[in-house]
Image (cartoon, rainbow, N blue to C red):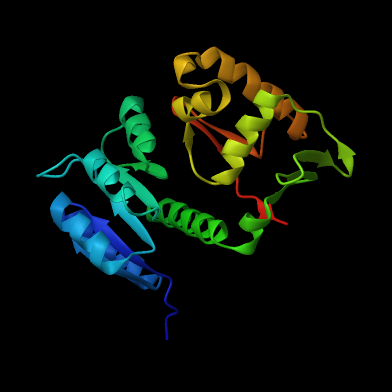
Length: 236
């Protein structure tokens, strides 16, 4: 008997894509509830209490970003965008509205499944003991948020206040894309949301301190034109 992998609400107006994705997800053990309009999707999200939502932005009744905003008013459920809109501005707006990840059409099912599983793990970790402890491991680096310490193999690493704020913002949503705007607000405040050059400089400094090779980072990853994400971390 197939193990139950999770409860999914899939909001998509294209019947061919709905059928394709539902079939693939059910083969992986997911229970899929379909909705072809934004309003149906919000209703399904409210009644089914899903573990994850897959959302198209181009819906016939409302823009998908409005759906994100509405759901975020009462739920932190992971939302993965599946959309034909490839513009970076669309991705940024959806992520700023509260989406957790963004995949453009055409897409491969293995990548969609991998992104879904990453978000399900992140969400489970957020509710679990590892997240509650506030201790995270990035390779040989240990970040202890309650102690406000960062060490590599037991040796203290010095981070500036801004570097530390950026790192904690990324860690608290490890695996999720954090947009430039969100990081700029966290690091410098809302009056600096256009100062992307500040962010590039400080993210490079963070990588030099935390990565074995800052030129080929494995922990702090760039989402080109959108923002950054921390690869999945181990809660201590």
